[in-house]
Image (cartoon, rainbow, N blue to C red):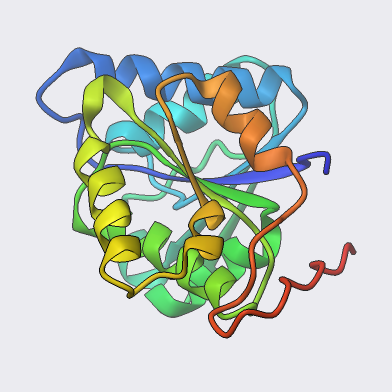
Length: 198
């Protein structure tokens, strides 16, 4: 499928290594150059702001979704193509899911992991049929890949569902993986339904 929009989950901090910001800039710029809208958490800080700024500088369209509580703390990026202020974190994730064809996690903390894990879960339950990917910057997500293998080997994730999530240290490769038609089954073995296109 052609990716028209991708949600990017990432840290609101920069992290300890400059490679994380470099990956964030590459992600924003590459998505813009491919004509793919960036959907993200709406902040101007950390890797979040870096992704947004890089996409905007490359002429891309960037849609932010931020809870009112964070907007009130003046953390919102007000130079975006579109900014949605919502009432809760749950509403943020729901709208980001609705606006996106796929999801990418860059390095980040608990919030980043929680956001990508929820979309992974929703695909597993066939709430939607949208894939998730981890951009494995400098081995950051290698433990997560190992954890997935453990989940499968210990019987908590069906092997047929492991294709919901992809891992790559190369952004172009990861985008190609996310653009492939869904091939996984749901938690009970039925084929994933096609996500309706607007």
